[in-house]
Image (tube, rainbow, N blue to C red; front, side):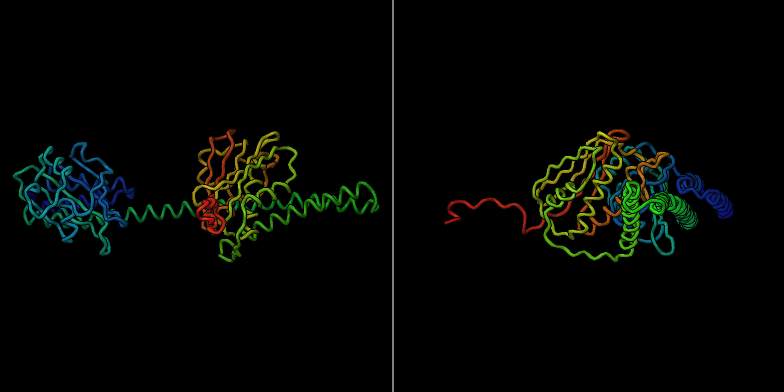
Length: 421
């Protein structure tokens, strides 16, 4: 097969370099790398692999001229094929026949693919970025092709250009992600400040109105009693908002210290539910004793936030069920409601700060969107986990907390008569 002369190769490499620089989309760059190296070296096929940093596995990212056996996403175990040989050597390597080359290890599936394609002459080069291996390029041709020293030089020059192009594309994508995240964070901050202003303004307005009524009425008047009740209720609401803000700040800065003791989750649940006043809902409790090592105040906060969240998003007449059970070595708390449900796009984000469901014009749901975020962080601080599930809008929600049961209080089997003696 005819080879490029050095001037022709230099011109071809310059054209390839310009083509690679035209895009910063990693997928486009990878596709162009595969097509360009195939054309440059006049081979039947070419593949571009990415190296997974954690496992060393090769993942096929780009392919040109090969059949469906070589599809994007194909994973090659570490040490397999001529590509692995090139990665170990740190420079381009070639073989006239990879199926008979003792230096190249092929497992049965890879050998079968190569035999079916009859692409037995191969050359591979690592992709290096700042001394780190980020991937590899491999070209393949039919039996009888011999890759020369000139081919190896051209492969090396191309691999260097491709590594730069791929690195630039990845950096651009990372910067785009950072920009998008920063813009989202900025929007979230603006939304939060607007929401905070609204949440504070409503109770403050109610308190101001009640104070005016107190000014105009005598201390024993019925209107004064109602105004006093409004003030007490709104002050409790404001205190709750401030407590959530302070707890969120303490959690984010690691300033919450847990003081753990053995606590029965079922007893805490019953006590908290008994203190709820919810004439609009039915609250059901099904709880067996389940002891955990926990900070009782924070455990109450976890349970209270989950039940309050369920009540908030459940219309009048709905049912909220709270259950506690022991599963193996774990204590499980489950809060299920028949309420608004969670849209699928929102479900992965429900435990993020300031995230809430769709707001209605009357703001009946209210709140700062910190309750579930605090639940997640506090549960994790206790070594547990929490997850949310929902069938979608109008189909209710389920929140499940799992924490390791306290060894001292796990249920034990009764001793046998022989053991009692």
